[in-house]
Amino acid sequence: MTSLAQRAASAPALLRRRSQKGLAGVVAGLEMLGAALLAILFAVVLAAVIRRYVFGGGFVWSDELAIWLHAALIAVGAPLAATSALAMRLDVIVRLLPASGQRVTAILADAFAVHGSLVLALGGASVAAQVGGVSTVLELPESLRFAVFALGGGLTLLIVLARSGLDRSWISAGLALVIGAGFYLLAQQVTGWFVDPPSLLAAAWAGLGLLLGAPLPFALLAGVSLSGAFGGLLPEPAIVQNTVSGISKFLLLAVPFFLLAGELLTEGGLAERLVRFASALVGHLRAGLAQTALVASVLFSGASGSSVANAAFGAKVMAPTLIARGYPPAQAGAIVAGVSMLDNIIPPSIAFLLLAAATNLSVGSLLVGGFVAGGVLALALAVGIHLSVRGVVDATPKASGAERARSFVGALPAIGLGVVVVVGIRFGVVTVTEASALAVAYSLVVCLALRSLNGRSVFAALRKSATEAAAVGLLIGASAPFAFLLAVDRVSDQMAALVTAFGAGPYAVILLANLVLLVAGLFLDIGAAILLLGPLLLPVAVAAGLDPIQFGVILVVNLMIHGLTPPLGILVYVVSGILRLPAGSVFRAVLPLLGSLLVALALLSLGAAAWPSLRFSFRGFF
Image (cartoon, rainbow, N blue to C red; front, side, top):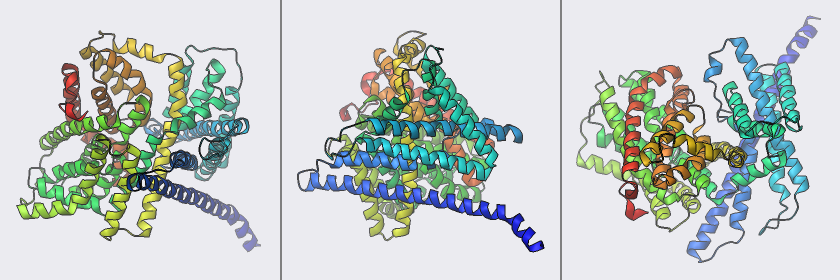
């Protein structure tokens, strides 16, 4: 009897372990499938590049196939983007609540994810059933593009509920399902009530979801969906169509490729060579190790394009060394987080790719502007580090010319990547997507030649990059119907009235535009803010006489500073999470660097207003 009682008591625990193991297996399977799709996508684009530039021709099917593979990658990664660390959740406010309040908000946050998942699953299935015809080149059924998102939405729903049940309780999962499904059903009704404009309701509902800790892409989808019941002009099929259309741009294929190139360089150890070269240059100065972290970040920026990737690398490599040399842990984390923001300013920059996709600005011109702005920001950070580091003696002996030369030769493969990419894009040798594919090929060949990569590390880079690319792509897709709703409601006119409240001159417009961005960046993810606010503010800036490239660069600089500010502050959260430090202590320690960055932003803005025709003194490049 005792044995039977023990078995009965252990049965729920055994079932729970098996369920957790099964869920982990599903997640691992999705990661592997994403890695495989990314590898195939890279092979297709690289084959097209080789065919075009070596054999003087091209594959007529390559662009279309690449866009379809990218859409499949995002759909497969949607469940991971909803439940992993890449979910883009705002949990600062939630963490201030008592335990009971956190349990309630967790259920409500999952309800938003359920609502957004149902929009993708059922809306995608509806479009797939209704749409006809075949694609232009491959002659594949157009319904397939929407069917994969229906599948991705369904898997997201299952994984969100399974994670809720296993992490908290199945009662919590059931409540999330009931609440989320209830709001989904409400969104399908014609209530007879109208909110003017409907985008206001969509923004309020998405904002509520964000405050509760819901994944940002799914909060956006839920907001647009609910607005349909109160006068919104986007029915569910149109939401999914806009989402798929938003990611079906050949330019956006550069995002996963630049992420993969950065991961390969990190896995292959070339990033550490950049650190050694940086140390040889500035390690002998006051606060030499902190200045080394800054210069290493500048160099790594030319190979990565992702501030989050740089922050993770710096937290693992630079921060422990800073702490060992006597830096307070919070200050070490703040230095790593502060210098990491440069990755999305100095080319190649994923933030500039997003802005170009949203506004049709020239990618090459934005990248050159990023070089100039990045130099100004790097100088400001150097001054901030010099003034804020006290009581630490970490300078190393000054490197000889021969030592600097050797470290430069060692770092040259990684430095060369950024130069090749930017020069190739700027002078029209290759397109942005082709350059990003060549960057992956370059990183792969160099690391394999140096024998610093093996099959396991390549697969790890593919898996991580695919998951990150899917999260970014899903955010882009979810922002598209939201941006459409803003356009229909003529929010741009209201934004124009706001930023010209003090006049329509360049100084007044750049001042108020910066203030709008500084406030919006406190509550919006950086990528979402670029996608939503860029198209709204750019026409106003151009009408005021500001140069569109200069304004675009300033917009990205402004929003990237919010990687260091609460409540979102993604760079601070990445670093504090890896170092196991309270995020609040790092936020306080980063204040001196934040001040120096704001001064640099003010100087760039004044320059743009005073000399719009100079384009950061690089007119010949544009």
